[in-house]
Length: 123
Image (cartoon, rainbow, N blue to C red; front, side, top):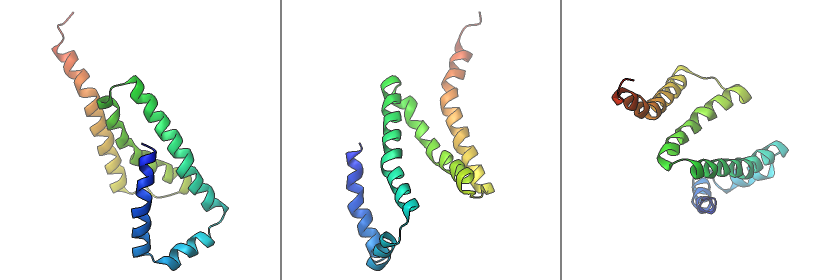
């Protein structure tokens, strides 16, 4: 899966070239500070290694149908992290979206258990 990510680089570069232009791209690379390079390194190596390792570990222990819906938590955690680390405002529409995602996941995860308990004979 990690190697498949390599194939996204050429089209994304072509789109950046088309919409931003070469001067903007080369200027951004030339003027990037240590923080920008550290962020790039963390996003490309740190998050990728952690993310795919955690995903593989979960898939080895649980059915894919159980694990796959949890990938919907990525934007929720992203919004939370940007609010905590960068001070980004959590507007009402973002909080509503997060609640809807969490509610949908709760229903998806808990509904089969509730139905199983409901249909089980009383002891």
